[in-house]
Length: 113
Length: 112
Image (cartoon, rainbow over the protein chains, first blue to last red):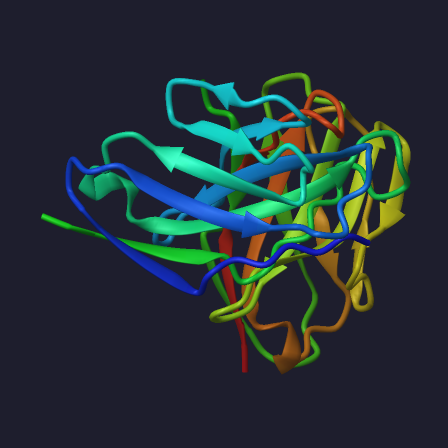
C-alpha cells in the first residue's frame, strides 16, 4: 500500500494562510488523496479529496503536484478552530483497500491568536 | 441531523468482561466501519461492512466481533476484554466506500 509522509507539527498565526504538505511518492494511478482532520476529543472530520486536479471547497483547497507525488492542503485563513491533527490519506478507488482508510500520525497544527 | 451516534461515550470494564459498543447512523449509508485509536496514534481499522449482512476484517480484528443486521446499526462486540483493548473507538459511515466518511464522537474504553 502506498504511504504518506507528513511533518509532525506546524504552527500558524490566526487569519494567515496555512500550507500543509504531504509526500506520497509511491502513489498509484487510481489512488485518491484524502484529507481528514481531528479536533481534540472528537472523531475525524472529512476536509477534502482529489485525484489529479486541484480542488476547492468551503473548508480548504487541495493542490496536487503534476506528478502526483505530493500534495498540499491549503487553509486560506486559519482560525483557532482549525487547530487539529491533519491526516493525509491515500485511498485506492476500486481496489481491495478502498474505504479502508490508513491513518498515519498526521500533522499537529497549532494556531496562535 | 444526528449523523453517526456512538454509545456509550465512556466505559470501564474489568479484564474478561464482554460488552457491545453501539453505532447507529441515520443517513442510509451502505458502508460502515470501526476504528480504534491508541494514545498519540492514528486510527486503525478493526472491521468494516459494505452493506447489511456483509462484514469483513480490517487491520486489527482479533478480539472483536461485528454484525450488520440492518443498514442503520453496526455494533462492535468485545468478547473477553483485555487491557490491550483500552482505546478510543470510532465508528464511521459513508454512502459508498470511496465517498467521504462521517465519524462518530467515539467511545472511550478503559479495561482494568
